[in-house]
Image 1 (spheres, helix red, strand yellow):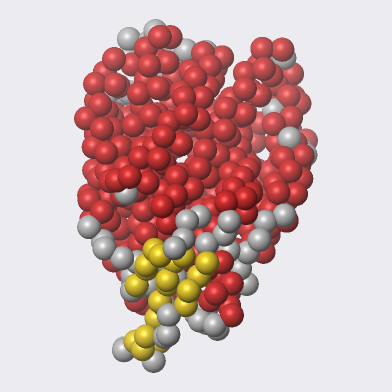
Image 2 (cartoon, one colour):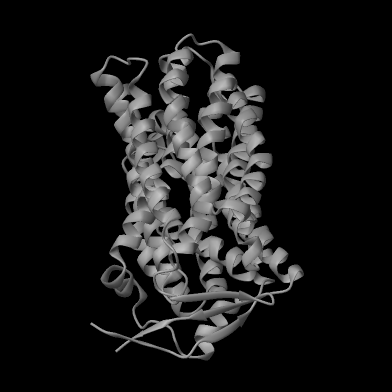
Length: 454
């Protein structure tokens, strides 16, 4: 197949006020996304098994709960296909309004579900259905949030603006951990199992209202307006992603593994592992997670500024290399099971992968730059999420196979680090976006030339 270059378009960059409003809306949206995810992640580790899988062996029930957590990852690629196409066809803003509404409603509805004791098998079935709906919306949420921030930003600020939506992850963790820490402190275990677990899910409704308010107020991105005005949109963007740029997709997937997978490992599996094997209580684990996540509120913007200077791909590479070096020493020390060691593990084991997380959006946006951008980012991220969603189940199975040897989580984290390190090294040498052969920064404007299929 040959390609015919289309006359270049000059795409003005939004003014700073518009760009800041866009990045705030992206940040709040990713915060709600992360909150919804981590509420269910903590829920899976603590409450899902006794409430929705009460009639099976506790160890099997825990695996079932983690499998349900992984299910939302498995359906993400379908959501990426659906919403990626919408994002490249009808626009970033409209698509993000759809995805955030679906996510918020599905999460809040979980808080209204009857338990197994009330409606029997319908309880896990309805829970599974809502988790599928969550996964579909997540498939299109992250890529759009990154692009709304990046495509409003000037090229010199792109690394920082691509990193700022990633603040949503620690904010979601902090909010979730704080709520559970408060609830477990003021409610008895019986009250938590009876009705207290519903509160974090029901809070998704007011958070959704805030997210919608901010997203309705933003403008469509200049790049998409240009593609729309020039009629340069792909008819079926998803097909173009796989047909023309499979290597770019593969690199983007591998680059995302550590950033997503480390959160699944540290904030889902480690909660269960810390209680069952290391002997911590939930309050200690939530407190340690809260401390580690709070530091990311400072480090992610700093890493974004670093990405402005050295490039997002190099930031990802530094994080992956550092994580690989500290993985096994970190888990060796953790076996001594003191609270200060737990906090240090959450800090060190969180900050280094955060380098890879902060640079991820910029890395992907540098690989894909034109009419397939939303689809490409969504698909790559969702496939990486599918793999990462299996991390708690895989690590639990590895724990059983090794009789909970201290090094078993390290194998998983080191593997994720190796893949991300290799991908980020390749991405750092990429050169230019695969679907936009020319990108020029001149007088605060980007000149973007796209390709059209002959």
